[in-house]
Length: 105
Image (cartoon, rainbow, N blue to C red):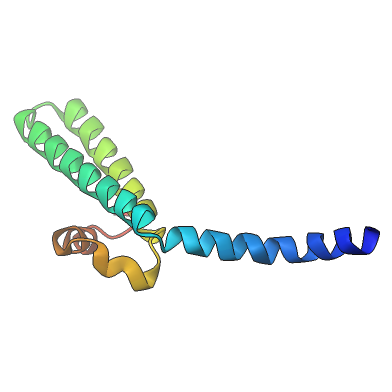
């Protein structure tokens, strides 16, 4: 019994990695990330319009820009969770948007 339990403990991390990979490559997982990216981009654009409305108020604009930076961080996090071989599922306009807004911008 101890030997069997020891083997199970040794193989469990590998099994979890296989399960994680299968989940990350599932269509539902990828589509949930694409949907999140789409929503975040729309929010970023909404905040951009809001910042233009308040162009004379520096504190409001600074707050909106900080929110946009947080959105970009979330977008990159979601994008980086999509496996490289599935990133073509991300719409071109979102990939271009991310390329125009690199991490740390």
